[in-house]
Length: 89
Length: 140
Image 1 (cartoon, each protein chain N blue to C red):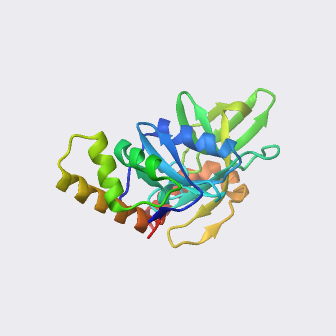
Image 2: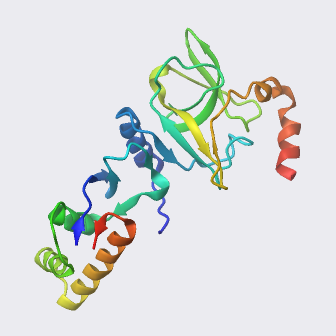
């Protein structure tokens, strides 16, 4: 999968939001928010081809988490990103 | 998608940044102070950077005593701008042009219908009757 071009991560308080920079209109009712973990993953795969396994490995590199949990979290997040339209399968 | 509540300070700081960049920003306002024009539970407003001179009847988002408020302009004078919520009976606010963050350029009703805000000339004229009009309106 690949992140869709034009979506940019911006800090919003202690969290982050992803905004389509190519789209003039910004709708806070349809905003994609990310916590610091999701934001860390996004920064590392932004603009690249990546797999769920890549996300899992990134989680394992940065956090003390067992491989099963990391794999499950990575898969759930990838699905959420695809549903949100910021990542193409 | 999950609904997330963002604190006003954080949300409006982001709104200000985006509006300053020249991008229209849509948010869901809170509170009843702009009834009957804005229903906070179902309407969204679109804010934009102030492009020209403000005029009486415009709805603007402005900073007031450390808070962010979206009300209608009632008067513009040398000493600043006087504002009042459509749903308020007599409380008015006062600010300067530099406190204004953006102007409301559109309203999306709960049914998806898009409305361009007017100047509410009739509503402003009927201010002395507002107490009764709002009471009737809230019971409908």
